[in-house]
Image (cartoon, rainbow over all chains, first blue to last red; front, side):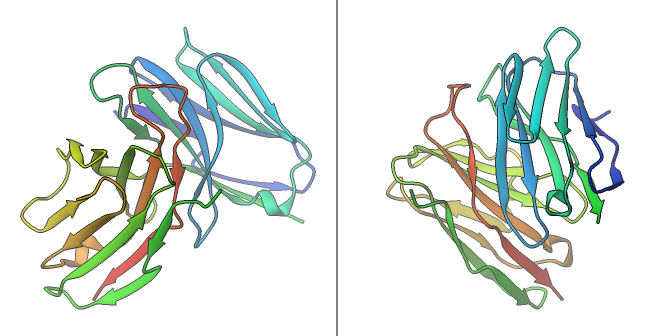
Amino acid sequence: KNEVEQSPQNLTAQEGEFITINCSYSVGISALHWLQQHPGGGIVSLFMLSSGKKKHGRLIATINIQEKHSSLHITASHPRDSAVYICAVRSNFGNEKLTFGTGTRLTIIP
Amino acid sequence: EAGVAQSPRYKIIEKRQSVAFWCNPISGHATLYWYQQILGQGPKLLIQFQNNGVVDDSQLPKDRFSAERLKGVDSTLKIQPAKLEDSAVYLCASSLDRGHSGNTIYFGEGSWLTVV
């Protein structure tokens, strides 16, 4: 079992729909990152969370430390949101390395 | 603020040839990471530097991969000889310092390697 699991693996939605991507992890963490990767491009950090909720524009990220679960929400989705969204956790021991999920491929259809 | 710079962006080589990737992190960032991302998978840490010292290279295939960060600034990752399964995106990332959960990690655009 992977330390970081994301669901769904693939998601296709119509423009304007509300999107939720989930991340569950099994290790103790000091922080969780949501990252965005466009085809052919590098990775952009969207959020870094250690508790509660953060909002940036149409993006909202929440984390429940007790349940070891985080969600990324996109409101009023747009075709430009099409990308791979990756959850990564920073462990709270040792060299505090990042462990990545396999990503959720989001496609927004106009 | 300039981001993490990587070169080359794309490289195609034959198996058993060698290749080198270069990374210049954000100015002042002490921690530098090299990740390998195979298509359809999440990034896998190859090596982590703190200044010019190696923090973690447990997943670096040392028989063919090497990396250095001699002056604690930019870094090179070398593969020699390359195998078909090395085809991947090699991502460089940096952060201000490890051991601080409040530090954001910044990624470069990646170097795409195809081994034929």
